[in-house]
Length: 226
Image 1 (tube, rainbow, N blue to C red):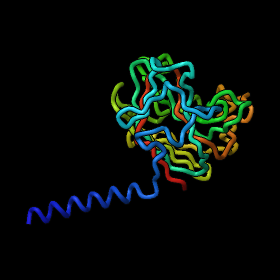
Image 2 (cartoon, rainbow, N blue to C red; image 1 turned 45 degrees about the vertical axis):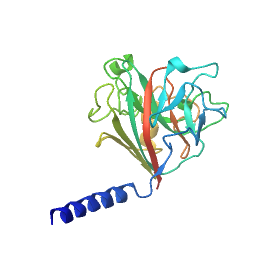
Image 3 (cartoon, rainbow, N blue to C red; image 1 turned 45 degrees about the horizontal axis):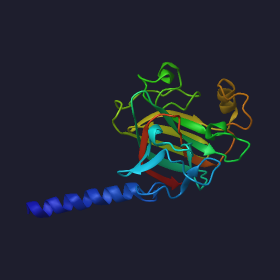
């Protein structure tokens, strides 16, 4: 009887996990950089290495082709993105989305929004409001800071549907806003992006992992189109 109950519990758990993951597709297969390329290039910079199921940016491994921000080959409009990240001490990175890839824009952040990835205590950006982990970078401060200590994995989510944006960090909703309405224009006008051409206006775009020159790891990157 105990074995039957245990088997039933395991089956229920597996079913629940399967339902929770239904519709999500991997953006990173854990083995290769298939589906990704360096922004405005066709290759992947040598600074990005696939190690133990993670995408690892190690500044020490950068060759002549450098690292650079990685972007997805595909664009996304309405989506639910999940990913895990961790940083080395004093490191800075970010998950950038709605990136418009075009040579006239020199970087992913020239057009895309960013969920900050940071060592809050060790990096100078941690002293700047709206620049801490989980924040919608330079726009909206997180309502709380459920970030894990440096070196530990964090689970993050970005849900964007019909202009409604939610950022989640370690299961806690930290940012909720509406994109592209009149209030959004005011938020952008009060940020560093106020005079950047077309910044934050694209309603579909690529997803990017930022090379800020520091060591960072990403894994379990999945997405569901909504």
